[in-house]
Structures are given as C-alpha cells and as structure tokens.
Image 1: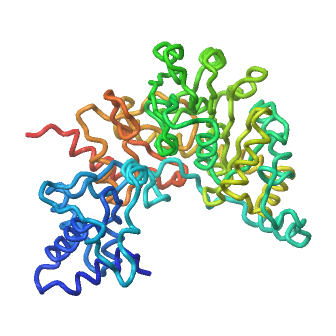
Image 2: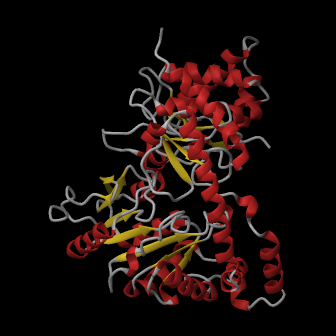
Image 3: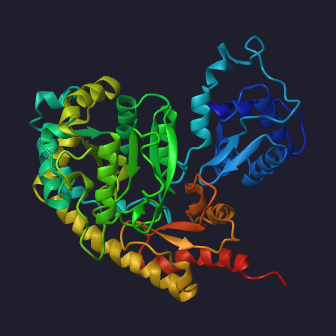
Length: 497
C-alpha cells in the first residue's frame, strides 16, 4: 500500500518529461521541498522503502538523496534516518499560505508541523528496523510462551468482568497492580501498595505523563550523558530544559552537579544497567543521589528497564526501596522481558501523587486493554512470568558470552568496553579516529543493525563505539553475523599504504 508521500511523488514523476530516472526523482523531491509539500524537519522514508513505494531501483533513490544532501536540502542523523534541513539553501522560495499547493481539495498546509514537532523529528532515534542482528534493546520474542499465554487469555475471555471492557479509571487493571506489587517486592525490593502502581502503554507514555504533571516549561531535568534518546526527546518536547550529567563506572556523577544553583525538577537515571554504557550505580552513589534529591526537592525517575537480566552477581536493590519516603518514581516495562509489541509498562509513584496521577492518566490517555492486563496478571501470579525470565536470563547469558568470545578472538580485549555483565547489548569500543556513525550506516546497508555510541552524547566529549544487541542472535550464528562488522572494521583499521 503506497504512502501519501509515495502517491505525491509518483504523481509528479508521471508528469515529468522523459529522461534519466534519478534526475527526474531528484527534480521532483527538490520541488516538493521548495514548495513546502515536504516540510522542513520532515523525515523521509528509507531508500529501500521509497524505492519499493515508487517501483524504482534503490540506487535511483540513493542518487537523488545524495545530490540533495550535497546541496544542503537533506541531512542524515545517526541511527535516525534522512531529514529535510530546517534551514534550506539560500534562494529557495518560501511558500506563503496563499500560494500553498493543493492535492485534490485539501491544502498541503495540513502537512506542516509545529516547531516542536519538527525538532522532535530532527532528533528522533526510532529506527525503521526493530529486529535482527545486532539491534540493541530488542529481546528474542520467538521464545515467548505463546501457548501458555493463549490458554490464560482464552480462559479469562469466557468470563470477562464488565469493568475490563470499559475505560480504566484506576490507573490500570487492579489484578495486575496487585500482582506487580507482590512481584516487585520479592524481586527488586520495591516497597509499594497496589494503589501506587499505574499501568501505562510503554515507558515513553509514563515519562510524558510525568513531564506534563510534575514540570512546567523551562524546568530543568538532569539526564545521563551519554543517555537514552527517548528520555531526551520526551522531556524536550514538553519544554523541559535538559542538563546532561556525565556517568562513570559508578553511574551518574554527582560531584559536578550542583543542585544549589538551580535545582532540577527531575533527575533521570538508569541505575541497574546504565544505558548505553552498562555501568551499575554503586550503593554509595545511590544514597548520595537520594540525599541530594531530597535536599533539592527533586524527583528521581528510576528507569529499571534491564534489572531482570544480570548474569553474574546479585542485583543491587532498586533506588525506590532504599529509604522510606524516597523521592523516587520507579519505571518498569515488559518490553524487554516479554515482547515490545505488548506495549505495557508500569510506574510506582509515591502515595501523595498516586490518586492525581491516575486521574491524569485517564484524562490524557484513556486506559484500556483490560483483557491483556488480566492475562498478564494471571501469567505473573501463576509463576509463568518468573519462569520465563529465568529461562531467558540463561539464554542471554550464553549469547553474550559467545559474542564476547568472538570479539576477543577476532579483535582483541581492547575492543570490549568495561561494563557490567548484564542487559541485552554490549558496547564494542572503537579507536577515536573511526567514525562510528558512518560505520553503523555502512553496516546497515549490509543488513547488520547497530547503534553508534557517539549518537548518545550531547556534550562535546564522546567515545566511539557500536552498541551490539545480542539477544536475538543464536549462539551458533554469532560469528557469522559478526563477520560483516569485521570486514568493515578491517578497512578502517588498516593504515593506508
């Protein structure tokens, strides 16, 4: 099924005079950008997708994209794609509302985005491909126990309570909140009641709710440097001023973070497995962070996304349970333990916030999926969830060990960054002279999906590397899947003759 942009370009291509197809496509794209049909800041389809949409070769699209990029119409962003530049080359006419082109009877002005929306797209990190070697952050969804899940789902659907068929006004399914409160206390030492738990459609929705309810535009948030692009974008689009704070082997550094100057409203951390470097926040540093947040009147947002997958030592308890009345909002997700398409996450909020947050959640997002939440509650209570996590922890541990072995034997110890033995990815360290953005883009052309480490930094000092997700790569295929990385690296590591 062709996209709206595909229809527009195909229609204009059909009206161009005969000639080289790549030149015709270039002309059509350039004209669409100039007349505002494709707005500044817009994200363009990947070359493969657009080629399929227009029934042309991929080289035709790449040629047009390259020419437009060299002329200042397009720019690429690491791990994000190709975007129309916010500021177009000099001499490009600005389209007035009166002169806006029209498709059918509908003005193309409806395709124009706000400045906030355009900035969001410019800094987007969500890729088009979400499965394959070595895509970080993606679990092996093929091991999900679908038969057990389906039986529970069918059993519950035969006697659905009426409230499960309507909107949720309790911040989620009560049975799931109860199951989670018990599970989190045993597994992560999270001290809460079911009433403190809100079920959300992903961690991004939870962050969006917190930003809207706890912050005013212009408030500050400390974020990890380097850190997860999703946290940055959700907060930034809500008008929050971001202050990157460097991390080291003990997690977020606090010596250089002076809360007395202008206290942050939020402090966002991934203490169990820092994303993307993988360090674990020490117990000493955790207590320092809680003391600092209490003094500054800040909320600590604890994203505990990878806590289940530690392969050696016992996990450190969650920040939330380290001190009574800690100013911590705990976030968890089932995207890594079950599958991302489930779109179920949760947050544990302090009691004074719980009732108001539930009202806001219902007002903004209208909770639902009652049957799915009931199924998950039973899946947890009956022990299937804990059993599945144990099984996957062993599987991922073996796959990680195999990838480490392949890297050591083919490249050497220096390429394995110091990080905890946990999570679903590891960082392949690269020499400073290697452009990890270009390397990652080149690997994608060969079917290998990685993320450049430098793309996670906002400040000037960066490390070069590749995030390699090993979760969905079979052990016996690890060396074969890693081979394209070795081929590309060999060319970059060999000094020119």
